[in-house]
Length: 242
Image 1 (tube, rainbow, N blue to C red):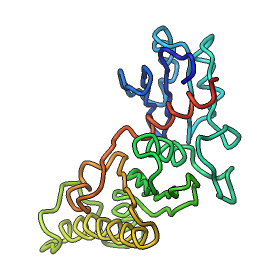
Image 2 (image 1 turned 180 degrees about the vertical axis):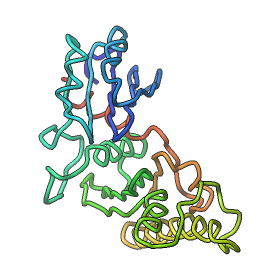
Image 3 (image 1 turned 90 degrees about the vertical axis):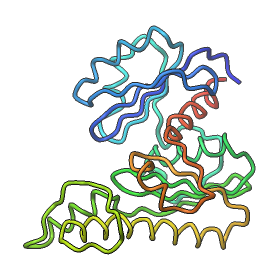
Image 4 (image 1 turned 180 degrees about the horizontal axis):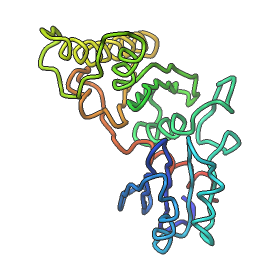
């Protein structure tokens, strides 16, 4: 392992930035700030001696300016990875998807892996037991499904979110919520089943903002890891700092 005592992990999404400190593979602290308050990142550099920045929204270089003089790696398509990849369009591949795989392989080395990230979109990513990333799939997330039904119809509303008690609704809000929630759970279970047929001994990991409300409806052998992407970014940082 590289000579990093304390790593600073920056994961910028569409509205928030996650700021985590790791010592080795151990998560020490985790904070969330608004994307508009990126200047606050300077508060977190004192405890770190190296940093990695991943961003799916703003330019990572702009975030780096708030972290000077801390040495930083900007995670991109050119960043060396601790696994091989057969993805044909690496420059269009979200860094969070690769980081999720890196975190999963750290937890379950040598196993075939399926990482499901339940955020704005649902992403499915597969790593073979030989350590080769083969791709996956992307579909609308839970709240995107609800918003789409309101946007593309004349009369369907956008209901306030609550966990539907049953998959059969008896009013319009219940029907919309049950359709989105249980429909998504059925999709995820179905895709897990397909990959289990392809990869013997598959280990599935679930992360993302909606993992806590989805896990109850999914297969029992799923490992829930809310901070998997952060763990993966930390793993990638250590892999690159020799």
